Amino acid sequence: MQANLLEIAWHDKAPVWSIDISQSNRVVTAGGDKVARVWRLSNTPALRVKPVEWLCDLRAHLTTVNIARFSRSGLAIATAADQGDIVIWRLSSDTDAAAAPTPLQVASEGTDAAPTPQERWVHETTLRGHHQDVLDLCWSSDGSTLISASVDNTINIWDACNPSARPNVIRAHSNYVQGVAIDPLSKVIASLGNDRALRIFAKAGAVPWAQVAVATAITADSKLFANDTQFKTFFRRLHWSPDGSVLACPSGLQFPESERMFAVHLFARNHWSLPAVQCGGLKTPACAVRFSPVLYALRQQETISDDKTTVQSHSQSCPSSSSVQRDGEVSSNDVEKNKPQKKPEPFEGFTYRMIFAVVCANEILFYDTDALTRPFATVEGLHCAEHTDVAWSEDGLTVMLSSVDGYVSVITFAEEDLGSRLGEQQMPRWLREYSLQRQHLDTGRPVNATRVIVPNAVTPRSSKVLPRSDSKNMKADAAVPVKIS
Image (tube, rainbow, N blue to C red):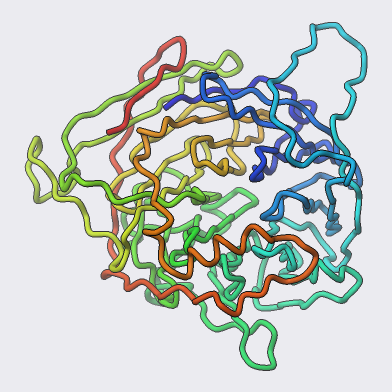
């Protein structure tokens, strides 16, 4: 595992508020310079630092661009900015969508020649419905629906196939809506807001999207999510697992609240009253969570060893060090140190593993659903300012992290770090059929999903806090690989 800061002027030193990666290894970033930019990420395995190549600028907004998201096929991009405008971009037909990635060609310092765009994205339409800043966007899997969240307290659901149609407006939150996510089958929408509420919406009869659940507190005095004095970032970017069975929510408070710690809440599908699991012990609130798109086979070993491996990297642009940690310390109070710890049981019904990244102000943590008692890796100190967003490559081996300091960092895994991928025949039936349908996404019409079986709701264990172990920082001059067994 390696972590490196890419010292590129991503947005002319303005903050990078959002980042996303498409299936074709394109990267889109949204910046404080009123521009979204498209890049290409190298997929060359032998390269230690993943290089990027600038492809083009997307210029249509007059204010800061807060969010940019690829559609599932990667052939469309949605960007949104302050003052509420949303722009949909389509890859021009004269651009080869399957062009092979190439390494970054770095121009020598002092060169004044303007770079030539490598591809063209067409400004297809502008969606106007929000009256204030849009903070989050998400596409349905078939590219037919776009959902937006705004500080005007509303969620808008847009028909991307008929952009002139009026959006379906949801007015359920009593304060800013800071995160929105739709499940892989486009049946459930989840949102998080500054009103400290997780709200769940589903299609119900004649009502296109009705609120079916709200999660705010355990008791009247014990809230699930941080308030605006505890949580001072703009975003609460929640995310669904690739199988649609788990919803991961940032900005959580670890309960009981007397411990004054933060957590990520994992909710099991159709069980919304309480989180099934808390990933607790966070030093600062998480602003974003993102699952890897890859499913992994369960590991064979039944115990977690007591070894610990730490690797550091040093960034020239920031005086603090960066640590990448594999922590195997036993943290349970009832288990003696140096004794094997029994592997915690996953959600009942899981026959595979999923991996997700948790973004906090100054660190990013990686969790495995098969061993949630602690993050299996932690990266700290890559950036000089708060993190804003995270994205996974389609192969699940590359993670990109954006920051207010204007830079983006890249974290790369080796295949042995994460374990064996789940074979197609080992996938649940509905997921196999859904995977076949993904070949036809973004055709301009909804995917015929009549044969897709809705995923079964996993049964949560009793809600419990899963603490993390503290990281130890050690300085080194450069990042080196670390094997995670």
